[in-house]
Image (cartoon, rainbow, N blue to C red):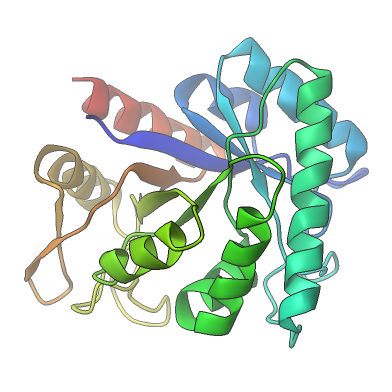
Length: 244
């Protein structure tokens, strides 16, 4: 099956504008909607859900650490109980607002530092999985596709939780299957390399690492970004490539 396209949306807040949601939404399959803890507010959330419904896009929650000032990009030393509580709180808010529009929340993808910590720290990942497994109905967790996918799938299965594995269109991968640090040369692909990586992922289920090795990635969905017009145009090109 062709890769799905997911994008972080609904991150504007008050008079602060973030992203080009209206331009992005027609070209994606999954909208990761901010829940108010790093971006988004009730009005923005409601408008983003309406836009997703208009374009028949699947909606997911995009929860984060409670870090509005830092846009959720700073790690926080939270206990497992705190993580479970704020994950449940944010998912519940999106779920309730989605249901009010006749939509059903399908998954959750943590944002920023919470996502990075989920991938790096077992305790954080397990707390997130526990929170989602305890939710009153099934919702999938989206996390990064890495060589540890079998372990993550087993952790989820033990909790009765299903997963979406995601890859990244515009990022170079290290030989261990993790994203190459942005501080290193070539961490962010040019347009040409990005499209070549998308084609390889979609056609073969593999990526070529920074050292030229071929690595299998069990990806279901591809993360794209529409923060500016160049990003929107890149999404359009990716959609055409996958559709072709």
